[in-house]
Image (cartoon, rainbow, N blue to C red; front, side):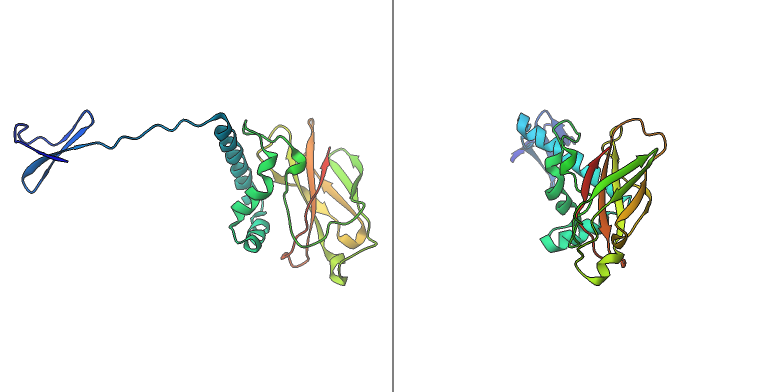
Length: 209
């Protein structure tokens, strides 16, 4: 900062990279701070794109009621729900704002067990029938765990949805999942269980259709 004469009259403002201003009746000049432009490396840009895609995906999940799952997991990890989701899912995204590995996407994580023998039994139109082994349960209440399912369609990979009209509880060993009408491209299905009181969740099982 430098004190200058009054040759500029009542002027105050900037000329080039110098700022002129009055203080206590005196005119001062100060050089504007130099801000170096940051140039990201290819690797930094790749990770920035993966990060942005992951956040976009999570924000879509907020709209389909999966936020409580990740907030609960985040408390166990001492982070917020978004950070818990990113830690579990960012490896699935690529540097082009898309998904590179659908098997590494997780709609749900939690303390409930994923049953053995989980598989797609049959598909008819937009309805998918899944089944699993009921021979082992963690507790008597586990039989009432309700089947849930998330779905990603290939034409909108960053707009995950909850599958509609999902039926089935753990003790039945069979469930039905309704997808959108007129499916023409691949879909990715993520099946998981929620306890009867809605407080606990299982991890998810991935299926490609």
